[in-house]
Image (cartoon, protein in one colour):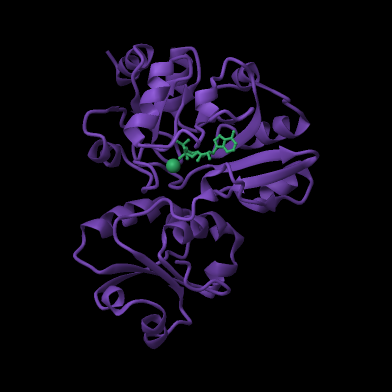
Length: 312
Ligand code: TXA
Ligand code: MG
């Protein structure tokens, strides 16, 4: 039996599996299995008010589970699916309220990963899948990360995730498209595709709503290159800065995103008082880093950047 066949069998029996995607690994259940969906929330220790993303393998399947598929959806899907884009649409009754936390909308995404697409096709229905980590903690980008966090889970190994941070979430408010969670798709490409300006607006129901998220166990202090040691010591407690390990955020955004969460995990294993993530003002001004800074700032205890100081 192949890993995919075994996973399909487990999902059909009402259980959950670890699923590779190009963004991060997911903790998947069949949308048709209430016990599987319940299990996602219980093993993740995730509150029921945080809705799950539903993964589909075709546009036809997206339309089967949502209403309101319009011209904008079609354009976005043609350009970015399969890929790291989640669209928020009105749900149909075949998506349970548990999955959407009682919302009338559902987040739909077609992952750009062979294993995920084949699994969904063989299962015959979509899978609901949040990132495969305990609530608020760092998302996994390898099968090993998932196994470390959930030792009893069957995980399909689909290699290291090629993107490394979660999908861009886009929704529609009247005629306007709105980004609820930035990812690695450049804003200008979305704007060009829809021929409109798009606001990034973290919705109270999107993941960014929580002040702390994506957190490693060690505190993160993040600062740009203009901060001197004296200034760091002035803004942050000395017991954190005295044995701080400094990581220079890689220059290339694609690379930075791909390694970010694995770095968070490495830092947890080090004998250090804190992680210092140092970035440059070029990175701060580069729109390709928006999604990366979004994750770093949510994970950080102290932020020393252009306009933000000391978040906690
Ligand atoms: O890249 C990704 O999106 C990964 C992989 C596994 O596909 N999944 C992921 O899931 O990041 P999760 O649960 O960690 O984040 C999904 C977020 C939720 O926190 C939720 O707030 C938001 O998507 N979301 C889901 N359904 C929504 C809805 N109907 N309206 C607004 N936000 C929604
Ligand atoms: Mg998550």
